[in-house]
Image (cartoon, rainbow, N blue to C red; front, top):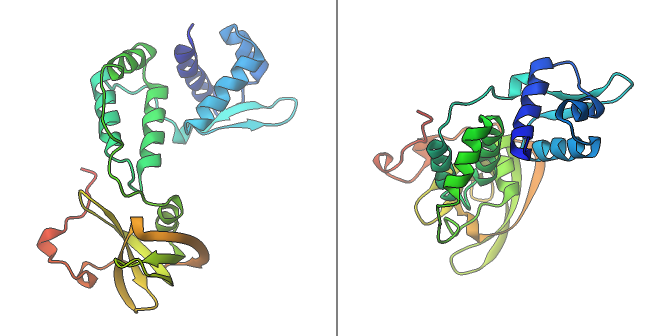
Length: 230
């Protein structure tokens, strides 16, 4: 059994017995490898976002959170590669890291033959460039998700920097730039902060309770559309 097949089988084995644990020694015997190999495989799966943790004790071992893992996914190789190409365009957006983790999770639970074919097809795709050129700092992306107030050091179009506390409410994106939509306490109003002009950022413990209203945006409503998952 090659490593790709074994990683897939490991997830399925842990899903099948969850919430009971499987020890590294038991898994090593099951897959006819060393316990060190199993530990490296588990570490690789954890790094790709699969929710596996170790339970200590004589009867402990590795456990997977069944509620947060996927059963075998019927994606074709072409569909998996299409997702990877789409994720390439996420480069620099607030969701680049989450997208990459989601793709790794899907590949981890695809049938081994389909996953191998997806890797072969991906090897025939070549891209130029790394997607959009204006990255969104990870601290900003995390604060929007966690609804935390930020202290920004921000440079205006002339390069003059200022420090201001803002309540992050969302994002505005166009083909060239990403903007943080935030309530600026200094100006007492909604402002757009171009993410490539953020020179420093600190997340504060205060929680954001304000909600984004399109009426606060000084942009014609017909030019703005909300992202849809359908």
